[in-house]
Image 1 (cartoon, protein in one colour):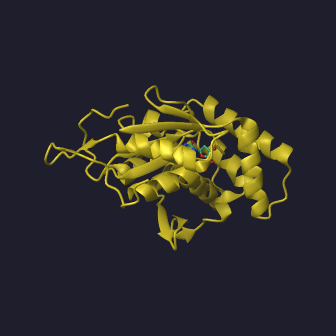
Image 2 (cartoon, rainbow, N blue to C red):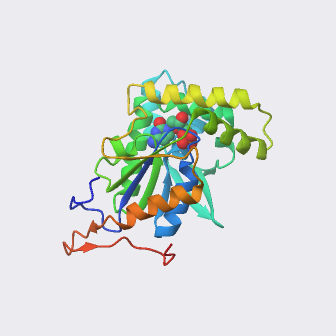
Length: 250
Ligand code: DC
């Protein structure tokens, strides 16, 4: 933990939640951000939005120059509307379109490319620079914010992660089988952890949490306890201040 490091995050902690797909990152990141009165930044949604645009614009992912030109002008926003996250890419609401199994696989592929990672790295650092944020992804604790005060690595067995993703897809009316979903989750993890740039990896100072046999509330309570025990230093006063909360003490 980097809790004793005096840093420049004014509005609160930078909390990193990394881990493979289906480990429950989005759910706990959302609840943790709510509990602490922080902003949630779903970096996977940002990569998905880029994949969507690349596909829509017909850009050849192998043409790195064209990709770089395109990515440098991209504008991805994460907005909250009626308690739900909306993903807006170059002014277009892509919230629903980015969640299909095809888009998941495509995102895993394009997120291995340098120009895409560079653009998202800069955007994510800008969004989280002031602190008071929960960022979830694959490389937050290792690359995007290696100085994050709190780092979690959330995992679960491949079987359990596949089962959860299957339930989500069924609820959305997708025609999928459990076997295919487990297979898709496993091959995406392999792709995400074997790429050269910012692969999925646990930071050496991250706290590992296995959510296979734990409820969301149990995982969340463990995370909240860690965050509440971590102070952040206000650079203006050099005083240690406690984590801001929205008053929902557990
Ligand atoms: O978290 P997710 O399933 O929505 O992420 C979609 C893909 O984006 C995932 O396969 C890997 C990629 N990703 C990444 O490379 N780095 C991140 N910080 C977040 C996601």
